[in-house]
Length: 109
Image (cartoon, rainbow, N blue to C red; front, side, top):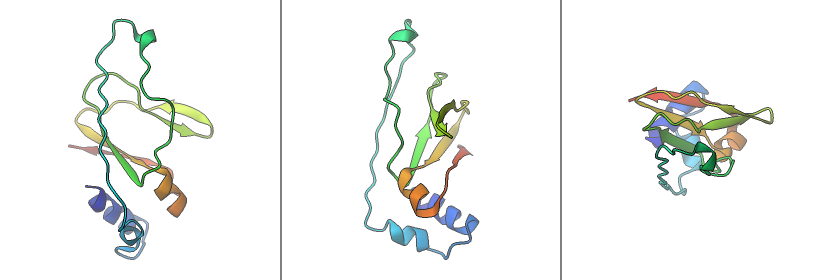
């Protein structure tokens, strides 16, 4: 999925085919799953510490109605509205630095 998204990004940015993919040819992939069941005491929920993703792309699928995803823009954390049955794709630090990009995509599944 990441390879396909990078190919589409290359086309949208009018970059030569495989130019972006070649940058990450030796890279690795990882998967992490976080599940946050509803809590009767939401003030007790810790979640993940605020962070940026050092990756090229992060693909998220939210499976419940608990909002938690935020992006940092102009020094402020902005909540992202939930989208049912969709992947949220974040551009990570590596791709942002490489191409001066800052955005996220929402892809319906």
